[in-house]
Length: 322
Image (tube, rainbow, N blue to C red; front, side):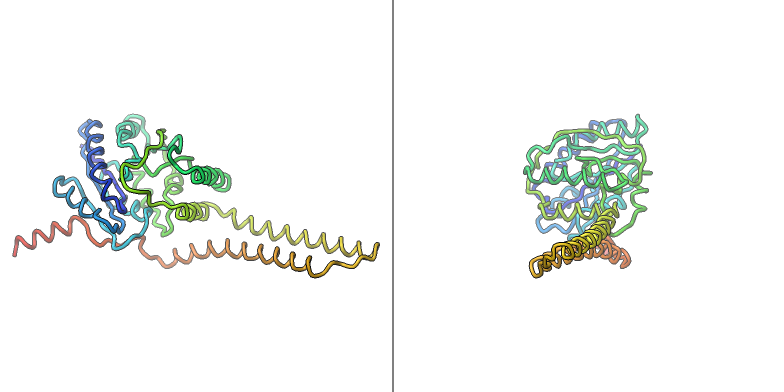
């Protein structure tokens, strides 16, 4: 019988996990077809009782598996770990806050088994409930990255998706340290079906994504899938050089014809500030790419596992044997 792995990255989701588990079990039962399921919870260094809740679920349901990080490595690392850890014929990524509706699992499984798709992904058709400024910047990000990148990032796309084993293996082959999963999912290709739904509020707790974190995450996506910022800095430098030649020629002719003295201090300061700002901007863009390259060359692991469910099983067996 086919096995479906449900991968759930968790960071301080103590309040939401019981609700998620109840809803997910109910949705999995509706899939039918003799589908077996396993839950792979990835604790991303939570500071509340998330691991206690996960272990409680493990005690009552042996389908529950888990791994716990030694510290907070970020959601991208948690997604990567879950995909590497799962063993199912199919795998689905879901957030624990129920903003990813479990009711879509049935349609996703049908798309993979009946329509021949390799991936069934969810996208929000609206951002109801989000702060207007956050929604505005999100729309701008998707427009910008799709203009400057050859990898299409679907507006409103979530990490919530169901994948075949072939698709999962392809994603896991991309072992880069600086991960941007939305880009990776699109870059690997394969046939993908998009399922639309309206934005849902969190069932419990607060979002872990501040505006600043989302801004840095968007920059990671742009740097990972486009080199256009480097071309922009080069073009701006060339434009400033041409503008300086034109201004030199203008002031030279003006002085020869009308004898007007060239304004000194104010214009000089303005030019210095402008050129200095452009240089710092270009150096900063180049520095971001170098920083990403530097981190990749270190070849550090994307995450470190502190505990997994097999550790507790081994401990119980050692206790029984002694």
